[in-house]
Length: 490
Image 1 (cartoon, rainbow, N blue to C red):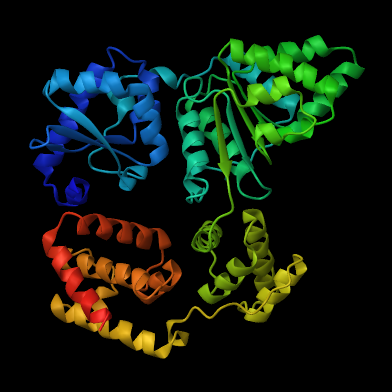
Image 2: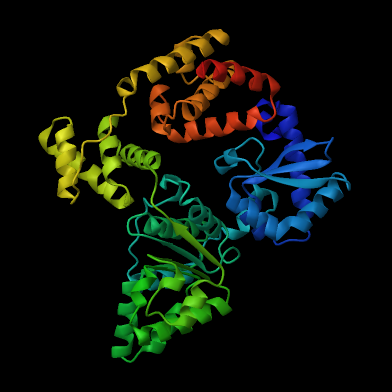
């Protein structure tokens, strides 16, 4: 597949693709709203041009961004490409995961469309005073550490993460309202506060209010008791974006729902941004008025599910990095095996262990981990031993033989295979071995990253994805892979 040769492009080829993208974006900007372009196309663009097929390949960081860009820009994007490049060429949409972080092919659309400076206004003193008064009135309680860059995205929350990022980058234009739901402890509040932190940073002249639903209920009840409901409603008039956490707590509160229905309608009619979180989807919110449930789902509903084992390990490692602490990997495996459905409790377990470590001045032991899990209400069982020495001995010997065979075949050492070298022949050999380990030896991702001494399971996922793509188009790699797998099956 063409996307697999992106890393091999020279600077001239990359510059050509970037310049073509610039021309197309400028052409597109004559027909489409600039902020909408940034919302959908900032992490996407031209991977390659295939003249034999008369196609321009456009890559998106994930399926979510691809489907929404295709929905909103398909015709105008095609027209722009045919206008500035060639009237006979069509678009081929593909997912290209590296665009989720950064790439030499990406350009800054804010600068290109000259909208960054106009969006980041310095609020005047009068407006700042009003903003402070509103924040003091509502008692905003936010954690500045809840950011997008320290939120661990996994397959079961990528949709919600991408939607939240899109809203935070271009509020009032993308996904309004946004409704995020999932079980307790999976990161809904982190996403909600990350949205607040991002919007507040990018738009300092706007009033962004974050409220737990219980706080909203208290404010409405207090306003009713003091007979100054109109004063409360006027305060909401000055709010530009409203984030309500745990909206399910509005259940059974008929009067509060009626008042909030009016607030919602006012925000929606004025195109102000609204974002909700809940522990269940809108249709399952019992004792919430049907008209409210319908409005919650007007635009985009995104769910968060529990992370898989590899992601739980990544979350624990990320939390340790933030805290600038370290715990033995084997102990993290025990935590991740027992705490399976609550990210918040993963952090509680870490805090418990780090506190014990600080008080005792001793390293954390396996017994400490089991005591921690029991304190949190778990009944831990002895975890699986992930060490490759404890695998079926014949299977391990066979895999070691394949590793040595691949190393000899490419004239490299086993140590180089397990290094972080990015030389082409080493990278190819390593990726082939990872695929063989997964498909022919039934190794899980954590076993694979352990064997190759890699610290990030996401790198293993990408490596396997990349080599599977190459096998579809590269005949040399196909031949090499066939030689190795024939040896496996002997």
